[in-house]
Amino acid sequence: MLNRSTIDRVVSAALEEDAPWGDLTSEALIPASATARAELVARVDGVFSGAAVFAAAFTLTDASIVVEQRVADGERFAPGDTLAVVSGPARAVLTAERIGLNFVQRMSGIATLTSRYVAEVAHTGARIVDTRKTTPGLRALERQAVRDGGGHNHRFSLSDAVMAKDNHLAVLTASGLSITQALESAIARLPHTTHVEVEVDRLDQIDAVLGAGVGTIMLDNFSLDDLSAGVARIAGAAQVEASGGVNLDTVRAIAETGVDVISVGALTHSASALDLGLDIRISA
Image (cartoon, rainbow, N blue to C red):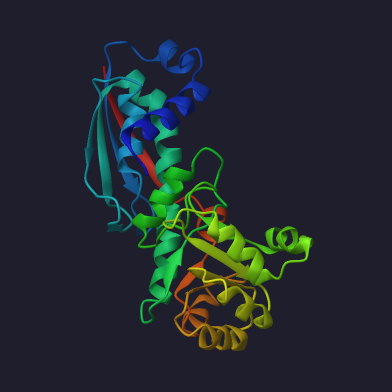
């Protein structure tokens, strides 16, 4: 999902926003002939993400800048580690500094938080996945960061799969059809390759949804006891996803109920940017 075209589009927009008419400070204070060497240094522990995005901030500003990655996406690092080295015209390095840092701090923060969730459920068969609660325009970057942290991605967009929630079901059944009939009718109109997921918020809804032959059932805001009961009732006839009330204090117990997937909006909407710094030395 995170290809060169997407990276260039997102980073170019950020650079345009930050310096629409150039970098007035650097152009006024830094000689055009000056060069710089900058090291991306970790101030905290974490998991790295965003190597290509970080590099693009500099190379799209000036193609002569060289970015040497010292740590790969998905690798852990410790305080004091050098993650990348940037060298080239000083003006351009200074112009791109903030945008490069913004992206890599954000993505590494998501990867690091995701890795903590993944570690909590490592002894189970549960998969940690993200949600569509992403920053508008940055979804591809943030979801790459989830993968770099050891997590997985849910559907990328509304176009990728059918996911019927309570409001969808309310509209579907307004004509008098049962949930099973309404879902069967909808599934009959879909290509056979389309995955269908349905959200339920009570145990007594499960049988009706199972009867339609859906691929995944989401148990939304269920108690631990009800999650266990739901897994037993579904009995492998569909994937079971748990959602709602998931945090680092609860995710282990949720995974131990036997669910297949745990979706966590916090991976992308609540991750803090990591403290990474760019230490720059300029030569006239």
